[in-house]
Amino acid sequence: MLAQAVHRIAWERDTVDPRSADPIQAFYNAHPYPPPVADLDRVRERWRDPDRRRAEFHLLWPDRPCRTDIDILVAGCGTSQAARHALCWPNARVTGIDVSAQSLEETRRLKDRYGLHNLAIRMRAIEDAAGLERQFDLIVCTGVVHHLADPGAGLRALRSVLKPGGVIHLMVYAPYGRTGIYMLQDYARRLGIGTSKSEIEELVRVVEALPWQHPLMAVLGQSRDFLDPDAVADALLNPRDRAYSVPQLYGTLADNGLSLARWYRQAPYLPQCGAIAETAHAARIAALEPAAQYAAMELWRGAMATHSLVVRRDDEEAGAPVGFDDERWRDYVPLRMPSTGLERDRAPAGAVGLLFNRSHRFHDIVLPVGPDELALLQAIDGHRSMGGIVDKAIPGSWDVAQRFFRALWHYDQIVVDASNARASR
Image (cartoon, rainbow, N blue to C red; front, top):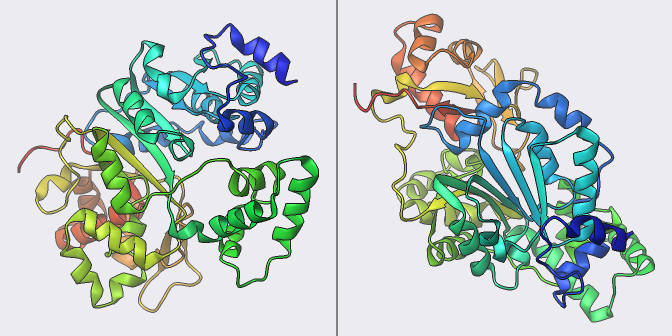
């Protein structure tokens, strides 16, 4: 099977030797990850709604008019990620690269099944991205940089193929939430556990028998596929991974010509959101510089297993930040995040519902809404500006609306299209 995969992919600019001594390449050929999927039908159905693409676009570029004909690089695409992007962004030109022939074979199968003519796949290391001789509006690199022998070289290579104004969606491991994983990695090394099928099956049974107090149990509760054999191998037997605290992440970005544009989901990093907001320390944290705020919140939350963020080149001026301290906010067009919902049955006294985001891992990040706020929420249609929503829902209640829209933004309930916001009013 592997030999056939190598042969099929070779014509697509094979610049990585399948016999390479890099243990990561050999590992992912033997244990492709994420676990291969049979189909992407549910993904296709969810993304039939064009507002999903609008919301994703404006999360990445709040101050630009929405475009769907963008160039996307999925760097370290694994078994399905590049195919997912090609399916979800049919007008985009998507390139997927990976060093694992087996992963690329799974991607090719999905490409053929769904007729993804907008997808090109290449066997290529991230560090060699410049050899693609193309530049990209969006680079997606999630769960990869922390496995590289030289993460800085990988980040610099991605930076080199980023278009002016382009962004990278990056995800790396975070240390505190992976404490249990690193304990079990050490356990496996001490016992000399290898990656044969029988050894992985034995390790799965050992993980299932863990005492409930073990730090890994929190991870098991968050991941539906953790006990898949290849997922266990990826987490506990991976030959190379590292994790980054917030200060280390800031330093790594700066060392490689990049800077943070925003967290992909920002509420967990903000002292305005969740249980911390009710404490006296919320104001003390908010008084810190942003990097120090985020570092403090990582320590307070204690269980962040990954950092997912949007980064840009550090030699480019950032666009106008989304803010609510002047009247520009009235021109913003809010878009609901697809992962949000409203719970009415457990609303606290004085509220008619609780807003939540399914992608949040922390259950304290919920936003109570009253009757006026619910009227504002229900008037969001993806077309009206915030000012127009106020005029429709609660005319003249500008202070209430300003506080609420700011909260929706902080809590990852909305993104905004600020492309038509005037510089001043």
